[in-house]
Amino acid sequence: MKSTNHKTKSEELFERFCDENSIRYLRIGTKPKNGLKTPDYEVQLMGHNVIVEVKQFNPNKEDKKLIDNFLKKGSTGIHGDEPGKRTRKAIEDAMPQLRQLAKGVYPALLVLFDNIPCLRFNKPTESYNIKTAMHGLECVKIGFQRDGMSPPVVIDRGRGGKRKVDPGHNTTLSAIMTMEENGNRIIARCYHNPYASIKIAPEWIRNENTRHYRLGAKQRIEFQEWIEI
Image: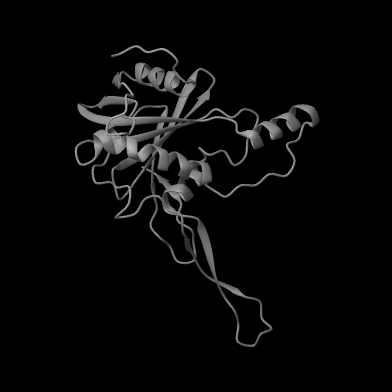
């Protein structure tokens, strides 16, 4: 185990999570290799080496305005953003680092922590944003009646563009794990990539504060949802 200064809150929480769950970890120096930074950690899960990159969401300018409105008026006002936008960006930023050490050799885990205070909606670590970032924006297929008078009907619900995982894209990514503080506990949720070339078995990191999910099978006229495993 290597000690280091200037840790982010997400890195401190991840190390605490590992300590509390008897997970051995090694902090990797982030010196660029081939022009790219290396991942943050290597951990051992039931004897399996796993490469880990930890990303933290900090307030941007828009967040700071919303937080200021909340503190002054008790309301953030109207706010909207493309579902999964920040989460997709975190995946984009992490993948070159994870590929440096993991590709074709080890499972790769992306750990996300939301460090944006006050906001309780559209958090980038919410399950919906994880789903749309990994598997694409949700879309609805509408059919119109020939009589031109009857209301349109939903033909199907499915996934659209901007997905970050599929059979030929980002297969190095084994799973995304989110962390959040709940009192003195760290709650982790692990969302598994069905297309991963090397998977992480849920049994490798099974404890009372960690939950695992996979995307459910497609049902007619329904969106796919996360299923706990």
